[in-house]
Image (cartoon, rainbow, N blue to C red; front, top):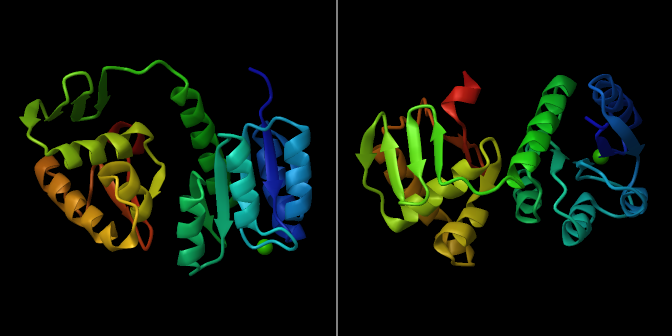
Length: 233
Ligand code: CA
């Protein structure tokens, strides 16, 4: 397989060189830059397989970099955000970032996330499957039917959409706002809590305990993420 290119955007020199070293050790070809303007310049010059983007940057902000990259490409983007900066995180996900890590993070965790994003980006281009299995959960996409431990589960249209949206990319974090748009088709904030109700009902039907979920995990302060029990074990 050819070498994968990663664009790393981080203004703190120490963090930048540590992350760069970890990514290179994992076999990636890394372009590391320290500000938003250089990030956009680099992005215009090469094709990258993934972008690791610090949100808090000098000159052009991380949000702006994220927006411009997303306008031009579907490249996976993983954001690095400050501790406690929930709004920043949500804004980033709404701008089309695929995942985020809160500082201080373990470089090993970052490498694992990058690897997962690249794996996911590959499966996105595969032909649509009609039936998918996640451990005990089975979704018949052609027949719109859902089974848990072999038994059929009756879902409402919104619950079905929510489940297929979340499970399509296991591990990807979805903000409530994003789920409102994708699942309910509304586009204003008052409906974000409606997502929580649908998740609650969906979990009950799937037999998923919110305290120890098998499938649908809460991402505190942000939204939800689907995990396949096969992969997380
Ligand atoms: Ca920074």
